[in-house]
Image (cartoon, helix red, strand yellow):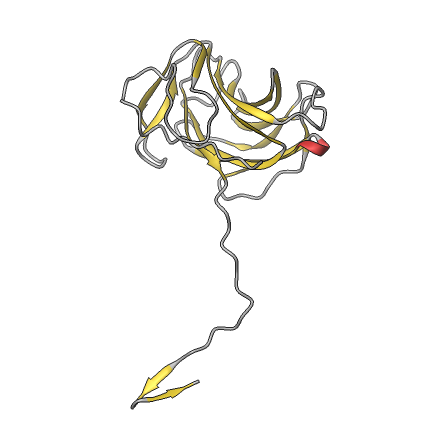
Length: 215
């Protein structure tokens, strides 16, 4: 299976709770508020416009299930209003009930990737109130994944959580904002767009002059 779940949050009414929200496509369930309050709001400037999911400070968790995938590339956009969130503020990919991979806004002003045994490795610095496009490439068979920020290069591959068994599909995404001093925004989750093929055939220039075609 390939990743097909998408949601840009534009179909939701501004101010509406995302509990039970069913917009987007390719999901196997609706958005579920695990804790706290998540609403659709007009997205801050600098993203793709339209609406986005917003969590105000506190223990806020929002999740949604999709058909399980073993090896895939997924991307989303996220924004944090401070550079020093005092608790986890980011996105986790799950297999069943086990969180395997995560990207978070670190308290030291760096975007970080989870590297097994509760270790987080820096990807790059981030600024407050700035949208970042996160792309995650994961390989279930090796229990490894990597990430890139915006149009940058991919990181090295890192080990996911040690409960990853090389066979269980990834089937749930959770947005988690446990910080008491940050507002977390999330938008535009979906597969990475396919790259158009590049033809190996040379182009032929046709010149029409005085009714005579030159090749």
